[in-house]
Amino acid sequence: MSVSSFPYPDVQLDLRGTPCPINFVRTKIQLERMKPGSLLEVLLDIGEPIEQVPDSLTMAGYEVEEIIDCTDYFAILVRCSVISA
Image (cartoon, rainbow, N blue to C red; front, top):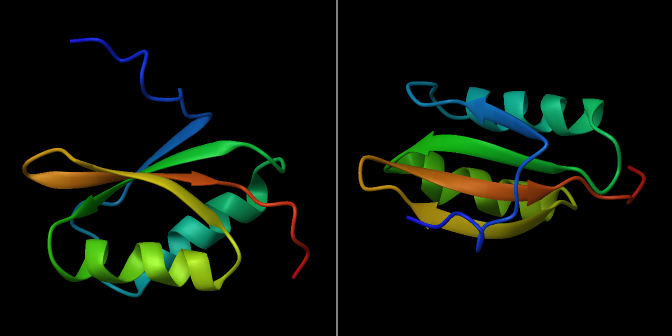
């Protein structure tokens, strides 16, 4: 399996088993700690987390670059924005 088609994340955050909205809050805190332009990979459960977190991140000004279906969970790649809050 080739991973070269996927960008390599700077940080991975495994939030499987973490309920909403805690998973969004933890993702946002991690993004705020990262350098602008960095890439964060977040692992999320099927259901409410994958339905809510990507949209919430987009509304908060972050760029969700990719959503990957990993069968039992999802991985999202989020670019840490340079937008000031």
